[in-house]
Amino acid sequence: MAKSLPEIAQTLKDANKKVQLIYAFNGTGKTRLSREFKELIALKNQEEQEEDVEAKINIMYYNAFTEDLFYWDNDLDNDTDRKLKIQPNSYTNWVLVEQGQEPNITSHFQRYTNDKLTPRFNEQYAIKDKNNNEIIIPAYSEVRFSFERGNDEPTEFVKISKGEESCFIWSVFYSFLEQAINVLNVAEEADRETDRFNDLKYVFIDDPVSSLDDTHLIELAVNIAELIKSSQSDLEFIITTHNPLFYNVLFNEFSRVKKTKEWRLEKLIDGTFNLEEQIKDSPFSYHLFLLSELEKALQSEDIQKYHFNFIRNIFEKTSTFLGFNNWEQLLPQDSREAYHKRIINLSSHSKHHGEEISILDDNDKRMLSFLVREIIIKIYNFKSNNNQLVTEEDVTI
Image (cartoon, rainbow, N blue to C red; front, side, top):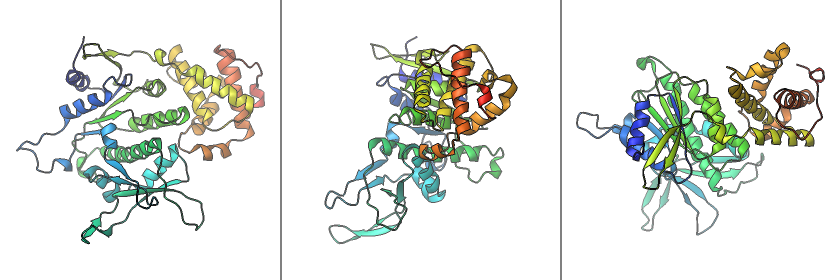
């Protein structure tokens, strides 16, 4: 039945699910939906409420408006001191000043970009305006970026790309969300380090980072899923995306999470909307792409750690299709536990690709070859252009 966006927002609220995943094409209205949901949920300035509404929140949301908190000063006069400035707000102030999350933000940011690309937050300093009046620039209100060389040579501040900027802003939000989940996982309110999140009920995430390559996009989806699955409170999560790969990975990651619902949002010609239940991920299949990438890696012998992310996702998708409760049931029975443990360790999604390559030994590479060619292709009949096989006897578990 056709609905308005406020009615769609009410449907999501009434669903009472731990996770709701929504797929929609670009331009459908995902960002507007996040705003409507915020308006529906957010605390109102009523007399009976506390004066400091910002002190406690009941919804956290990430969307295009979140990025508006950050803007560039390109130093047009000298073209040397390029910095990303942060609009004054309690959200980033709490993350950076009160909680000291700078190291975590840097770690998250470098995971998706480059381990040498380093954000540097400012300390408080003073400048003079046109009338020679002193202006105090607060700490953590500016960010400069540089590529660290590992020596004492001075570094040049660079303006990062739009995609890298989105990754940075997402990393700030992710650190905030991670902290909130950890606080709420303490069951007794009196034992929590802060009461700021005691009223938090919803997290709305709209297309977190759409500029990532497929490998990092899978990594991001798995990281989000792992964080959400670590939440032990009654916090509810809504995630919208236009990216079929991102949707597909999350669909499979949440397939065994209780109180999960998947939707497809459609915009109709008359400006109204349909919210249809999406009961399977088959319209957004990516397993053949992953298998193709794995075969290319095997043929070129350029096997990296993140390829185990690919094979893990193929197993997850195949297990869902075949009706298995756990994807490890697809592995050879005699060595199932050892294979499962090794794949989990190698697909931890916690490192930058540059660091992933070095930990793979020849046996890991043989294991990947065996799993792709013997298990996925030979047993489960995925189509392949390569008939060379590695037997299980070639692999040491």
